[in-house]
Length: 98
Image (tube, rainbow, N blue to C red; front, side, top):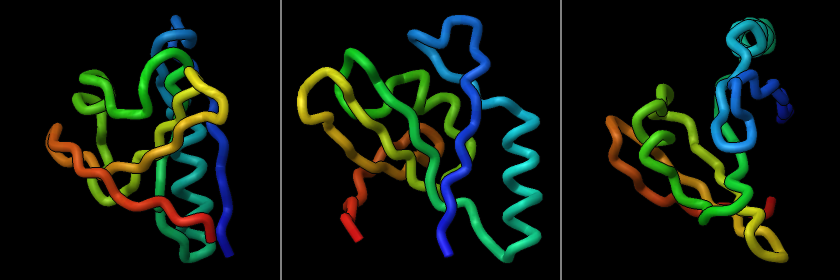
């Protein structure tokens, strides 16, 4: 079974940056352990820029095995891409509609 665990953006300027609520991340990992689950992806939007990891995204990426799913809202329909980010290196990975 798959589950999306939505976490709050607690950054002081949420219009331009994101910071996942640490308590929610801890709770999400605890819930995952309870149900034999793993962290598969982390997602956030780029309201005005392309769906590509920004320098800040690359610098702050902490989970190299998770996919980073970025949605750009600058066009209609929105653009959606996924990446692996490891030590600042970015590699696009395919997105499946399944």
